[in-house]
Length: 146
Image 1: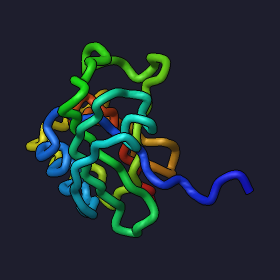
Image 2: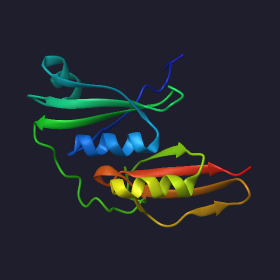
Image 3: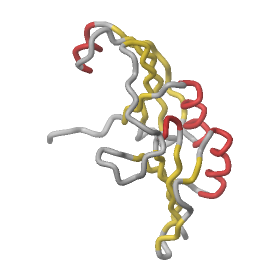
Image 4: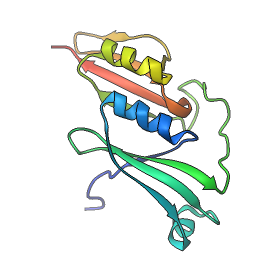
């Protein structure tokens, strides 16, 4: 077998506390925070002088995690406007299954979430939407219809 599992998705952020608050409000759990630096970090990232804070948040079922990273050095590089459309090469989104999509969107709005489009119905199966989260990250939400 080539892989055992997907361990986590990494996201670089400027405001660590705001990013943690957003994902905790979404329903994720803060697993821990740490500072990362040293030769191993430089070797792994291909950068020199890495010093960053990381926070790991996990889904309630424990199967998926996000690693949030705030770089102190080297300086972060902007990837362009944070309100880029979804169809740009390399753009990615994170999709979460939720119990109540409208409630979830309402709870995330005070944390800066904005709908990218609108809540849409896919047949009789799902309500779906994309929202912009911290740092312009596109977060997908899916509510399975019963």
